[in-house]
Length: 411
Ligand code: SF4
Ligand code: SF4
Image (cartoon, rainbow, N blue to C red):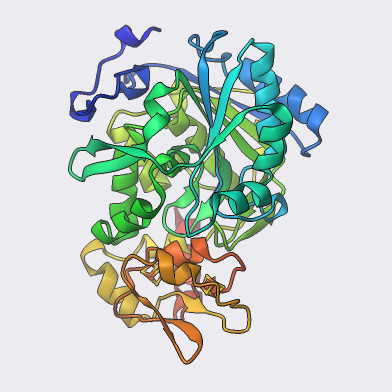
Protein backbone atom coordinates (compact mmCIF):
# COMPACT_ATOMS: atom_id res chain seq x y z
CA UNK A 1 0.00 0.00 0.00
CA UNK A 2 1.38 3.38 -0.88
CA UNK A 3 1.15 6.47 1.25
CA UNK A 4 -1.52 7.85 -1.06
CA UNK A 5 -3.89 4.97 -0.28
CA UNK A 6 -4.29 5.90 3.37
CA UNK A 7 -6.09 8.93 4.69
CA UNK A 8 -3.96 11.80 5.91
CA UNK A 9 -4.90 12.73 9.48
CA UNK A 10 -5.69 16.42 9.08
CA UNK A 11 -5.59 17.13 12.78
CA UNK A 12 -2.01 16.02 12.97
CA UNK A 13 -0.70 17.83 9.93
CA UNK A 14 2.52 19.48 10.87
CA UNK A 15 2.46 23.21 10.84
CA UNK A 16 6.12 23.99 10.40
CA UNK A 17 8.33 23.27 7.43
CA UNK A 18 8.80 19.59 8.11
CA UNK A 19 7.86 17.58 5.06
CA UNK A 20 4.78 15.36 5.21
CA UNK A 21 5.83 11.75 4.74
CA UNK A 22 3.89 8.54 5.15
CA UNK A 23 5.03 8.55 8.78
CA UNK A 24 2.40 11.19 9.42
CA UNK A 25 -0.67 9.49 8.07
CA UNK A 26 -3.36 7.68 9.98
CA UNK A 27 -3.65 3.96 9.55
CA UNK A 28 -6.64 2.76 7.60
CA UNK A 29 -9.10 1.00 9.90
CA UNK A 30 -9.06 -2.23 7.89
CA UNK A 31 -5.38 -2.36 7.05
CA UNK A 32 -3.77 -5.62 8.12
CA UNK A 33 -0.28 -5.55 9.53
CA UNK A 34 2.34 -8.19 10.30
CA UNK A 35 4.17 -8.63 13.59
CA UNK A 36 6.92 -11.20 14.03
CA UNK A 37 8.08 -12.69 17.33
CA UNK A 38 11.32 -14.65 17.03
CA UNK A 39 12.92 -16.72 19.77
CA UNK A 40 16.35 -15.27 20.50
CA UNK A 41 17.99 -16.32 23.74
CA UNK A 42 21.17 -14.26 23.76
CA UNK A 43 22.98 -11.20 22.43
CA UNK A 44 25.56 -13.33 20.68
CA UNK A 45 26.34 -11.25 17.52
CA UNK A 46 26.06 -13.99 14.84
CA UNK A 47 22.83 -15.27 16.42
CA UNK A 48 21.38 -11.78 16.54
CA UNK A 49 22.20 -11.11 12.90
CA UNK A 50 20.42 -14.30 11.89
CA UNK A 51 17.39 -13.53 14.09
CA UNK A 52 17.10 -9.91 13.00
CA UNK A 53 17.08 -11.03 9.37
CA UNK A 54 14.32 -13.54 10.12
CA UNK A 55 12.31 -11.08 12.22
CA UNK A 56 12.37 -8.52 9.41
CA UNK A 57 11.40 -11.07 6.76
CA UNK A 58 8.49 -12.42 8.79
CA UNK A 59 7.26 -8.92 9.53
CA UNK A 60 6.87 -8.34 5.80
CA UNK A 61 10.35 -7.03 5.03
CA UNK A 62 11.90 -3.58 5.29
CA UNK A 63 9.81 -0.60 4.16
CA UNK A 64 9.90 -0.05 0.41
CA UNK A 65 11.62 3.29 0.79
CA UNK A 66 14.64 1.65 2.40
CA UNK A 67 16.79 1.74 -0.72
CA UNK A 68 20.51 2.32 -1.31
CA UNK A 69 21.13 6.02 -0.77
CA UNK A 70 18.47 6.32 1.94
CA UNK A 71 19.39 8.32 5.01
CA UNK A 72 18.41 6.16 8.00
CA UNK A 73 17.81 7.05 11.64
CA UNK A 74 18.16 4.31 14.27
CA UNK A 75 16.53 5.14 17.58
CA UNK A 76 17.42 2.80 20.43
CA UNK A 77 16.20 3.43 23.98
CA UNK A 78 19.04 5.25 25.78
CA UNK A 79 17.11 6.25 28.89
CA UNK A 80 20.17 6.68 31.08
CA UNK A 81 23.89 6.07 31.27
CA UNK A 82 23.67 2.48 32.41
CA UNK A 83 25.53 -0.54 31.08
CA UNK A 84 23.56 -3.05 28.98
CA UNK A 85 23.18 -5.75 31.67
CA UNK A 86 20.86 -3.44 33.65
CA UNK A 87 18.31 -3.74 30.83
CA UNK A 88 17.49 -0.04 31.05
CA UNK A 89 18.68 0.56 27.47
CA UNK A 90 18.53 -1.24 24.13
CA UNK A 91 21.37 -3.74 23.90
CA UNK A 92 24.17 -2.37 21.67
CA UNK A 93 24.69 -5.71 19.94
CA UNK A 94 21.12 -5.56 18.63
CA UNK A 95 21.83 -2.13 17.19
CA UNK A 96 24.96 -3.58 15.56
CA UNK A 97 22.95 -6.47 14.07
CA UNK A 98 20.43 -4.02 12.60
CA UNK A 99 23.23 -1.90 11.12
CA UNK A 100 24.78 -4.97 9.50
CA UNK A 101 21.43 -5.98 7.99
CA UNK A 102 21.03 -2.48 6.62
CA UNK A 103 24.52 -2.59 5.11
CA UNK A 104 23.52 -5.73 3.22
CA UNK A 105 20.73 -3.65 1.68
CA UNK A 106 23.31 -1.12 0.51
CA UNK A 107 22.48 1.47 3.16
CA UNK A 108 25.46 3.73 3.84
CA UNK A 109 24.04 6.71 5.71
CA UNK A 110 23.06 5.56 9.20
CA UNK A 111 22.67 7.71 12.31
CA UNK A 112 21.95 6.71 15.91
CA UNK A 113 20.15 9.18 18.19
CA UNK A 114 18.24 9.23 21.45
CA UNK A 115 18.01 11.48 24.49
CA UNK A 116 18.20 10.36 28.11
CA UNK A 117 15.99 11.22 31.07
CA UNK A 118 18.17 13.22 33.40
CA UNK A 119 21.29 15.22 33.16
CA UNK A 120 23.93 13.02 31.54
CA UNK A 121 26.77 14.12 29.30
CA UNK A 122 26.48 12.67 25.81
CA UNK A 123 29.88 11.06 26.13
CA UNK A 124 28.95 9.34 29.39
CA UNK A 125 25.65 8.16 27.91
CA UNK A 126 27.21 6.78 24.75
CA UNK A 127 30.15 5.13 26.54
CA UNK A 128 28.12 3.40 29.24
CA UNK A 129 25.32 2.19 26.97
CA UNK A 130 27.85 0.78 24.49
CA UNK A 131 26.65 3.01 21.63
CA UNK A 132 29.98 4.77 21.20
CA UNK A 133 31.75 1.45 20.59
CA UNK A 134 29.12 0.25 18.11
CA UNK A 135 29.09 3.57 16.24
CA UNK A 136 32.90 3.60 15.96
CA UNK A 137 33.24 -0.03 14.95
CA UNK A 138 30.38 0.02 12.45
CA UNK A 139 31.24 3.51 11.21
CA UNK A 140 27.87 5.14 11.75
CA UNK A 141 27.04 8.58 13.03
CA UNK A 142 26.02 9.20 16.64
CA UNK A 143 24.30 12.53 17.27
CA UNK A 144 23.04 14.31 20.39
CA UNK A 145 19.35 15.20 20.63
CA UNK A 146 20.02 18.87 21.28
CA UNK A 147 19.05 21.15 18.40
CA UNK A 148 15.35 21.17 17.72
CA UNK A 149 12.48 22.49 15.67
CA UNK A 150 9.08 23.05 17.21
CA UNK A 151 6.12 21.06 15.97
CA UNK A 152 2.47 21.40 16.83
CA UNK A 153 0.75 18.70 18.81
CA UNK A 154 -2.97 19.58 18.82
CA UNK A 155 -4.19 20.36 22.30
CA UNK A 156 -0.70 20.62 23.73
CA UNK A 157 1.00 23.44 21.84
CA UNK A 158 4.35 22.93 20.20
CA UNK A 159 6.99 20.45 21.23
CA UNK A 160 10.73 20.53 20.47
CA UNK A 161 11.71 17.67 18.15
CA UNK A 162 15.21 16.70 17.04
CA UNK A 163 16.09 19.19 14.32
CA UNK A 164 17.59 16.61 11.98
CA UNK A 165 14.51 14.37 12.14
CA UNK A 166 13.00 15.65 8.90
CA UNK A 167 16.23 14.94 7.01
CA UNK A 168 15.93 11.16 7.47
CA UNK A 169 14.20 9.08 4.83
CA UNK A 170 13.62 6.10 7.10
CA UNK A 171 13.19 5.98 10.88
CA UNK A 172 13.82 2.60 12.50
CA UNK A 173 12.85 2.32 16.15
CA UNK A 174 14.81 -0.19 18.27
CA UNK A 175 13.06 -0.03 21.66
CA UNK A 176 13.64 -2.05 24.79
CA UNK A 177 10.64 -3.86 26.23
CA UNK A 178 10.18 -2.70 29.82
CA UNK A 179 7.59 -2.14 32.47
CA UNK A 180 6.80 1.49 33.22
CA UNK A 181 5.58 3.09 36.43
CA UNK A 182 3.39 5.54 34.50
CA UNK A 183 2.34 3.78 31.31
CA UNK A 184 2.47 0.15 32.54
CA UNK A 185 4.65 -0.89 29.59
CA UNK A 186 7.15 0.96 27.43
CA UNK A 187 8.07 -0.32 24.01
CA UNK A 188 7.89 1.03 20.50
CA UNK A 189 5.25 3.75 20.88
CA UNK A 190 6.90 5.41 23.84
CA UNK A 191 10.35 5.03 22.30
CA UNK A 192 9.53 7.86 19.88
CA UNK A 193 9.29 10.26 22.82
CA UNK A 194 13.09 10.20 23.13
CA UNK A 195 13.31 12.35 19.98
CA UNK A 196 11.88 15.21 21.97
CA UNK A 197 14.70 17.32 23.31
CA UNK A 198 15.77 16.33 26.83
CA UNK A 199 14.54 18.77 29.46
CA UNK A 200 11.25 19.47 27.67
CA UNK A 201 10.24 15.88 28.32
CA UNK A 202 10.07 16.29 32.07
CA UNK A 203 8.45 19.73 31.67
CA UNK A 204 5.38 18.26 29.97
CA UNK A 205 4.64 16.13 33.02
CA UNK A 206 3.50 19.31 34.75
CA UNK A 207 0.81 19.76 32.09
CA UNK A 208 -0.24 16.11 32.27
CA UNK A 209 -0.06 15.28 35.97
CA UNK A 210 -1.53 11.75 36.01
CA UNK A 211 -0.76 8.47 34.25
CA UNK A 212 -3.82 8.73 31.99
CA UNK A 213 -3.22 12.34 31.02
CA UNK A 214 0.40 11.51 30.25
CA UNK A 215 -0.67 8.54 28.13
CA UNK A 216 -2.96 10.84 26.11
CA UNK A 217 -0.11 13.27 25.56
CA UNK A 218 2.36 10.55 24.58
CA UNK A 219 -0.13 9.18 22.07
CA UNK A 220 -0.55 12.62 20.52
CA UNK A 221 3.23 13.12 20.31
CA UNK A 222 3.63 9.69 18.75
CA UNK A 223 1.45 10.94 15.90
CA UNK A 224 4.22 13.24 14.72
CA UNK A 225 7.17 10.88 15.37
CA UNK A 226 6.05 7.56 13.95
CA UNK A 227 8.69 5.01 13.00
CA UNK A 228 8.74 3.25 9.63
CA UNK A 229 9.86 0.00 11.17
CA UNK A 230 10.32 -1.45 14.66
CA UNK A 231 12.73 -4.08 15.93
CA UNK A 232 12.14 -4.54 19.62
CA UNK A 233 14.72 -5.81 22.09
CA UNK A 234 12.89 -8.27 24.32
CA UNK A 235 15.78 -10.72 24.49
CA UNK A 236 16.17 -9.49 28.03
CA UNK A 237 13.32 -7.25 29.12
CA UNK A 238 12.79 -5.29 32.31
CA UNK A 239 10.29 -6.49 34.91
CA UNK A 240 9.13 -4.85 38.16
CA UNK A 241 9.34 -1.10 38.56
CA UNK A 242 10.67 -0.11 35.15
CA UNK A 243 11.72 1.73 33.14
CA UNK A 244 14.82 2.25 35.30
CA UNK A 245 14.35 0.68 38.72
CA UNK A 246 13.17 -2.79 37.73
CA UNK A 247 15.16 -5.95 37.16
CA UNK A 248 16.16 -7.98 34.06
CA UNK A 249 13.77 -10.64 32.80
CA UNK A 250 14.88 -13.16 30.18
CA UNK A 251 11.96 -13.15 27.78
CA UNK A 252 14.14 -14.35 24.88
CA UNK A 253 12.23 -12.74 22.00
CA UNK A 254 12.74 -10.22 19.21
CA UNK A 255 9.64 -8.48 17.88
CA UNK A 256 9.40 -6.68 14.56
CA UNK A 257 6.77 -4.89 12.52
CA UNK A 258 5.87 -1.72 10.70
CA UNK A 259 3.09 -0.70 13.10
CA UNK A 260 4.54 0.22 16.50
CA UNK A 261 1.10 0.08 18.12
CA UNK A 262 0.59 -3.47 16.87
CA UNK A 263 4.08 -4.49 17.99
CA UNK A 264 3.48 -3.12 21.50
CA UNK A 265 0.03 -4.67 21.68
CA UNK A 266 1.65 -8.07 21.09
CA UNK A 267 4.71 -7.53 23.28
CA UNK A 268 2.73 -6.43 26.36
CA UNK A 269 1.59 -10.07 26.65
CA UNK A 270 5.05 -10.77 28.13
CA UNK A 271 3.57 -9.18 31.29
CA UNK A 272 0.20 -10.86 30.82
CA UNK A 273 -1.45 -7.65 29.56
CA UNK A 274 -4.04 -7.41 26.83
CA UNK A 275 -3.60 -4.29 24.70
CA UNK A 276 -6.90 -2.84 25.95
CA UNK A 277 -5.36 -2.63 29.45
CA UNK A 278 -2.68 -0.20 28.24
CA UNK A 279 -4.21 3.30 27.96
CA UNK A 280 -1.36 4.54 25.75
CA UNK A 281 -2.09 1.87 23.14
CA UNK A 282 -5.84 2.41 23.35
CA UNK A 283 -5.33 6.12 22.79
CA UNK A 284 -2.91 5.76 19.86
CA UNK A 285 -5.34 3.39 18.22
CA UNK A 286 -8.25 5.79 18.81
CA UNK A 287 -6.24 8.55 17.16
CA UNK A 288 -5.75 6.30 14.15
CA UNK A 289 -2.01 5.74 14.48
CA UNK A 290 -2.03 1.96 14.51
CA UNK A 291 -4.00 -1.07 15.51
CA UNK A 292 -4.32 -3.35 18.51
CA UNK A 293 -7.08 -5.45 16.92
CA UNK A 294 -5.99 -9.12 16.88
CA UNK A 295 -7.93 -9.75 13.66
CA UNK A 296 -5.83 -7.09 11.94
CA UNK A 297 -2.49 -8.47 13.12
CA UNK A 298 -0.85 -11.36 11.31
CA UNK A 299 1.43 -13.03 13.84
CA UNK A 300 4.47 -14.78 12.41
CA UNK A 301 7.50 -16.52 13.93
CA UNK A 302 8.27 -19.07 16.62
CA UNK A 303 8.08 -16.72 19.62
CA UNK A 304 4.34 -16.77 20.26
CA UNK A 305 4.29 -20.18 21.89
CA UNK A 306 7.14 -19.16 24.20
CA UNK A 307 5.17 -16.12 25.36
CA UNK A 308 2.24 -18.09 26.68
CA UNK A 309 1.93 -17.67 30.45
CA UNK A 310 5.16 -15.68 30.68
CA UNK A 311 3.64 -13.20 33.16
CA UNK A 312 6.78 -11.21 33.95
CA UNK A 313 6.39 -9.07 37.06
CA UNK A 314 4.54 -5.80 36.47
CA UNK A 315 5.18 -2.40 38.02
CA UNK A 316 2.82 -0.83 40.50
CA UNK A 317 1.43 1.24 37.65
CA UNK A 318 -1.62 -1.05 37.55
CA UNK A 319 -2.57 0.28 40.95
CA UNK A 320 -1.95 3.92 40.03
CA UNK A 321 -4.19 3.62 36.97
CA UNK A 322 -7.08 2.66 39.23
CA UNK A 323 -7.13 5.98 41.08
CA UNK A 324 -10.03 8.16 39.83
CA UNK A 325 -8.61 10.76 37.47
CA UNK A 326 -9.87 14.03 39.12
CA UNK A 327 -8.69 12.88 42.55
CA UNK A 328 -5.36 11.41 41.48
CA UNK A 329 -3.16 14.02 43.15
CA UNK A 330 -5.04 14.24 46.44
CA UNK A 331 -5.59 10.49 46.81
CA UNK A 332 -1.99 9.59 46.11
CA UNK A 333 -0.92 12.32 48.51
CA UNK A 334 -3.23 11.04 51.27
CA UNK A 335 -1.96 7.50 50.72
CA UNK A 336 1.60 8.80 50.96
CA UNK A 337 2.30 7.43 47.50
CA UNK A 338 5.43 9.40 46.67
CA UNK A 339 9.01 8.57 45.63
CA UNK A 340 11.36 7.82 48.49
CA UNK A 341 15.08 8.47 48.39
CA UNK A 342 17.07 5.70 50.01
CA UNK A 343 19.81 7.66 51.74
CA UNK A 344 22.12 4.66 52.07
CA UNK A 345 22.15 4.23 48.27
CA UNK A 346 22.15 7.89 47.24
CA UNK A 347 25.48 9.08 45.82
CA UNK A 348 24.33 12.73 45.87
CA UNK A 349 24.74 13.26 42.14
CA UNK A 350 21.80 15.71 42.04
CA UNK A 351 20.29 14.26 38.86
CA UNK A 352 16.87 13.86 40.50
CA UNK A 353 17.04 17.47 41.71
CA UNK A 354 17.77 18.73 38.19
CA UNK A 355 15.16 16.64 36.40
CA UNK A 356 12.22 17.47 38.68
CA UNK A 357 10.04 19.98 36.84
CA UNK A 358 8.04 20.67 40.03
CA UNK A 359 11.02 21.53 42.24
CA UNK A 360 9.82 18.82 44.57
CA UNK A 361 13.31 17.50 45.30
CA UNK A 362 15.00 19.44 48.02
CA UNK A 363 18.56 19.48 49.27
CA UNK A 364 19.25 20.30 52.88
CA UNK A 365 21.43 18.97 55.68
CA UNK A 366 23.57 17.34 53.00
CA UNK A 367 20.79 15.10 51.71
CA UNK A 368 18.14 15.04 49.01
CA UNK A 369 14.50 14.44 49.89
CA UNK A 370 11.06 14.66 48.25
CA UNK A 371 8.57 17.39 49.11
CA UNK A 372 5.35 15.34 48.88
CA UNK A 373 3.00 18.29 48.43
CA UNK A 374 4.81 19.52 45.35
CA UNK A 375 5.35 16.10 43.80
CA UNK A 376 3.02 15.17 40.91
CA UNK A 377 4.25 11.58 40.74
CA UNK A 378 5.75 11.91 37.26
CA UNK A 379 8.49 9.36 38.08
CA UNK A 380 11.17 11.39 36.28
CA UNK A 381 13.44 11.29 39.32
CA UNK A 382 13.19 7.49 39.50
CA UNK A 383 14.07 7.29 35.80
CA UNK A 384 16.99 9.68 36.16
CA UNK A 385 18.64 8.17 39.22
CA UNK A 386 21.73 6.25 38.07
CA UNK A 387 21.94 3.97 41.12
CA UNK A 388 18.32 2.97 41.81
CA UNK A 389 18.30 5.01 45.01
CA UNK A 390 14.69 6.13 44.52
CA UNK A 391 11.69 3.87 44.71
CA UNK A 392 7.96 4.12 45.02
CA UNK A 393 6.88 2.25 48.11
CA UNK A 394 3.97 3.51 50.15
CA UNK A 395 2.09 2.23 53.19
CA UNK A 396 -1.11 1.10 51.44
CA UNK A 397 0.67 -0.43 48.46
CA UNK A 398 0.52 -4.03 49.61
CA UNK A 399 -3.20 -3.83 50.34
CA UNK A 400 -3.95 -2.15 46.99
CA UNK A 401 -1.81 -4.64 45.09
CA UNK A 402 -3.78 -7.50 46.64
CA UNK A 403 -7.10 -5.86 45.68
CA UNK A 404 -5.75 -5.30 42.17
CA UNK A 405 -4.61 -8.91 41.92
CA UNK A 406 -8.08 -10.23 42.78
CA UNK A 407 -9.74 -7.79 40.39
CA UNK A 408 -7.58 -9.11 37.58
CA UNK A 409 -8.36 -12.70 38.56
CA UNK A 410 -12.08 -11.97 38.42
CA UNK A 411 -11.91 -10.62 34.86
S1 SF4 B 1 9.80 14.31 43.00
FE1 SF4 B 1 10.09 12.90 41.31
S2 SF4 B 1 8.06 12.08 40.91
FE2 SF4 B 1 7.78 13.91 42.14
S3 SF4 B 1 7.47 15.55 40.64
FE3 SF4 B 1 9.65 15.51 41.12
S4 SF4 B 1 10.53 14.18 39.54
FE4 SF4 B 1 8.33 13.84 39.54
S1 SF4 C 1 18.62 9.94 44.68
FE1 SF4 C 1 19.73 9.19 42.89
S2 SF4 C 1 19.62 10.88 41.43
FE2 SF4 C 1 19.08 11.73 43.42
S3 SF4 C 1 20.99 12.54 44.20
FE3 SF4 C 1 20.76 10.45 45.02
S4 SF4 C 1 21.86 9.15 43.55
FE4 SF4 C 1 21.54 11.12 42.54
